[in-house]
Length: 561
Image 1 (cartoon, one colour):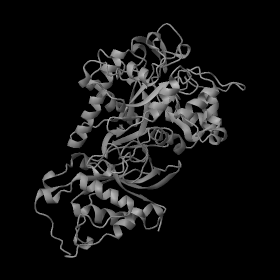
Image 2 (tube, helix red, strand yellow):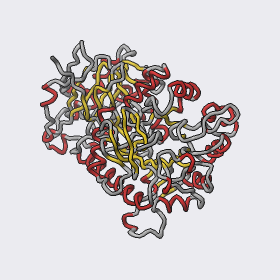
Image 3 (cartoon, one colour):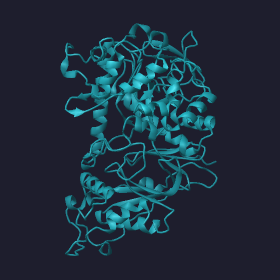
Image 4 (cartoon, one colour):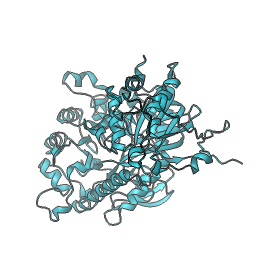
């Protein structure tokens, strides 16, 4: 049997009820299977250990309840449209119905970059992918129906089937460096509020982004102490809304990316020089800069390092080596937590880069920008991309590297050179600032003014680049154009690779699937048990639809003349 049919074989081996009774529960509580029970069952399916945990009746005694509410995709258009039947059908909570969504006749992105035809089923109650079937197995469709019949029909679920007409299904995009967008600046301590954060999270869905790291430029201690707890509270509120199933759908807010303030002054770029410091006291300097030291007032509102996913710093600075070792091996509060340290805004040499990787750094921030250029005798951090053998001899791996592929920050030939040198390490980021989505004119970035003209953002009155204003789907399209890579290879750089940077491509805890709504489920991959965060695209890599936790969050409607 094909490997991808492990779900089917697990279901087929389920023990039927000894009584053989097909009597359905009469109470709403009995008819409705809780999200936690369904997720637990999904976990068992994935491991092949399921043994009829719901005591389901034999499939022959169950009625088929699949409802095929098709969308239509016009043959002359690649835009996604739902039918009126799907739009107006609502689940009946009193009868315990939870509608699943099956994306049928799609090309599904695999972790090797290939696109295989098949279908994928999403459960909005648990927020997880619950079934995947691939068409290369002749019995795939029949097996798919068997799975849904035995696993979900007996649980009174419905399935809405969306014919994707051969379009591409990819994990949702993950942006690990987003300074702001749509008029919202994540470094604005005076005006930022939770509504602003949710505004960005909602509007990102149109560009296929389903998860992002809010990013702060180098700021004052007071600004960090104001903004980081605010974003933590927004994350907690979003998680609570997910559990209540009444959330206005938005992109997942991940841990923060603190870009600074531990930079080489000569490589500060658009960061305000008055905030640039060295981590001369190692971890103590980190805690002091971000307002984490025990001498802080108002300790009840004091944020923790676990709110931070990534810190960008210059590794050659005094105290940086100790800080990197501490951050990447950190145990904060009651659970294990380590922070990704990225090398950036740095005057580091190649040797400094080797030492930083040895200390625990695993990422290079916006490659080529704000670092020494590659030279044939002094390769700098860029030289790490082609140092696989040397690093391997030291027991180390090459770092990941992010790139802003907007056609402005990095020349297309340099994009191609980096990718050809280390394709599995490439991570696309927007590095977008508040002016993204607003058009030309004067805008803000932290305490500084920025001028936007087209796709170029510069500090007002200078030629210094100040982040970007392009969306992630634009970066993916331009990356494919510049490198000549395949569609799937381009998509991996915005999905699997950033997930791997954050170590989110697999469950963070062994018991992750034992809870109802799974905030720590794998992202950036399409597999059973992963978060149902998806994007539907055409061959031009235009976003046609976006799903977050199994719920349709965005659809691009074609307008008929």
